[in-house]
Length: 184
Image 1 (tube, helix red, strand yellow):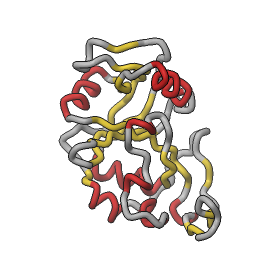
Image 2: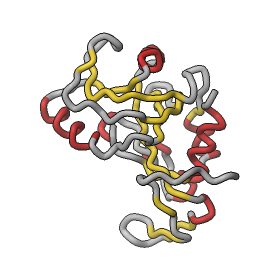
Image 3: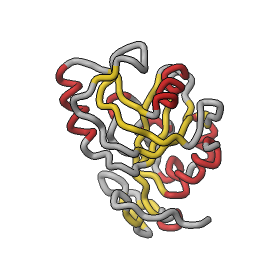
């Protein structure tokens, strides 16, 4: 498989990595470079389609504490980052994208989604909601879940609203597999 170009937010995966808290060693070197994958949840396909049409993504608004936390986390998502949408109810990945603007810390979006969303950023989509990779297939096909002793993909990849703007570390092979299934 050809190697993807390295970006500043990627690092080479050593041949062996210690699992959190020490213990079990993970052999991940054969899968290449680490990609910081930003996974954003969506409760429905209508919101995904609206974001694609507008060429942006954002997160739903919340109380002042949540806004403050998200603003801080959003500073860690550089332009050029890889992203994908996670459909929460039906539990599947869809619509991979590349981030091409920093999140706007003070902007509130009221004209794309039915509710107000915050921290919008521009995206270049690589697919549409027509394609999806359901949880069980992702678990079976992606290398990253098989390297960490967990029984649920949501314990390996950060897919919920509380972890918006927090990347999941995946290999370039994981990203390539997502693209093979979801890109158009």
